[in-house]
Length: 68
Length: 172
Image: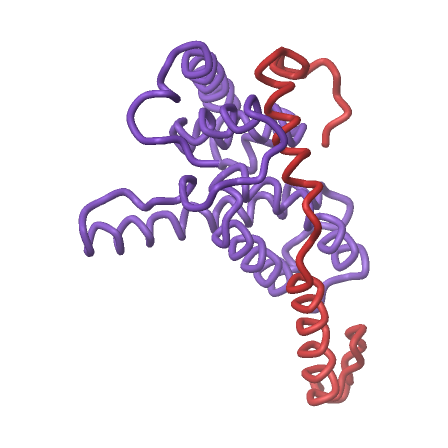
């Protein structure tokens, strides 16, 4: 993830490194199971429900009077 | 506090990389996906500890690896309680990998100690810097470098030797 080139280990691009990268990329190309998007939707739904229950908007604009 | 839009989008976009990291650590298994699920839940819950503009992927990888080690300790305890054998992760299910070379490589990777495997994946496959890897692993940069070097030597030994063809029949 880093763009710094002065600190790149020689493993990048050598035989072991290429195989490692190929394996990682192979894993990363797997189709993402539906359960993960459903999970994100559930987390959002819980958050929206909590926000409406506590009288705040989902974007965190708390009702100031509640704290004063 | 709820995750910002940046974190939410980052989480969704990171899923393939998080899965690849989890699978590299513990095989293409149900456990890998459980780790990713737990990582997403934890990241969501503590989104307020993420500092905007810092490396979100490194933050998520840190959560995943900490969860991996915590579950690993738990599993080892449970397995020791039952029959004293090492948990059978990494050999659990045959993997659909495109060629023998890649299957051998994956089997060799599985033989490395966890900390060495983690270092070599983070640097060699995920593309993190030494500094980022040291932060993710919670150790010094020198430790990252020495684990990486040992991992590489050991992998080369395994791939050039006959360890993969002896002992247990190969899976995947």
